[in-house]
Length: 68
Image (cartoon, rainbow, N blue to C red):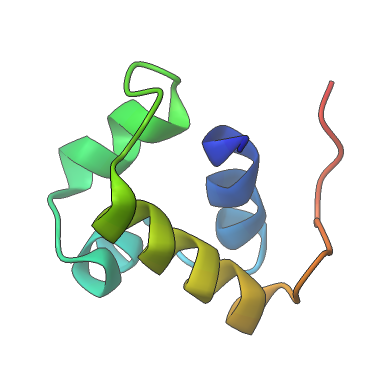
């Protein structure tokens, strides 16, 4: 799973890291580290919430940005 891409998509859809962190039940610094690739595996709970938010805000199976 490319967590950096999912977070970039959510950002492009209008969510900032603070909002994303609140929705995921973690700190903004955790979202920042995931988006920069410092945290490669956010764990089931946070990962599932990111996926669910992505499906709701961007759409299941869609991406707002392409991976470079």
